[in-house]
Length: 133
Image 1 (cartoon, rainbow, N blue to C red):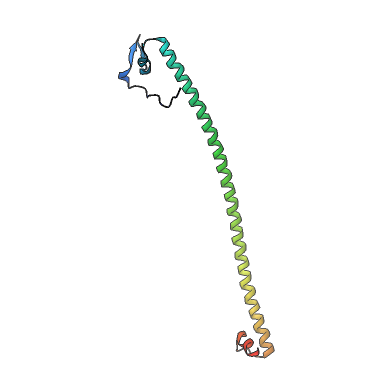
Image 2 (spheres, one colour):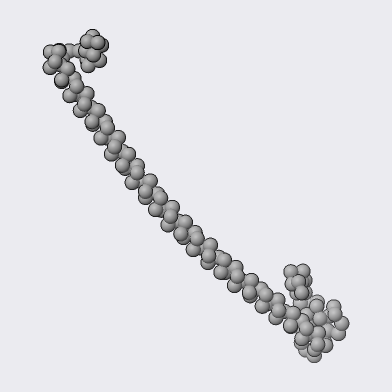
């Protein structure tokens, strides 16, 4: 039985009274609303629908838990990669700083060495190299 196409319960004034009990409109549609057989059938159908919905709820809860676990793992992995990227940035900054200092030291030593060789301090290293070549 497909419970998705079931009609919503009727508003209270659509209920009929049978022996001081309210009967659902689905019982009234199928014949005698006071028939215990119809009420039992309706109750059976509702129990089946309830079991199906409860099972589907359990399946969805299980899937939800799996998705939460996957999301937590993905967030941990992302945090790990962000830490690695931060460490790499710091390493690159250190290397860059070292390169700047090394280049400056090298230029200074080259200038000092060339000035000793040529005895001139007033000219740049490029000028000395150009004139000697």
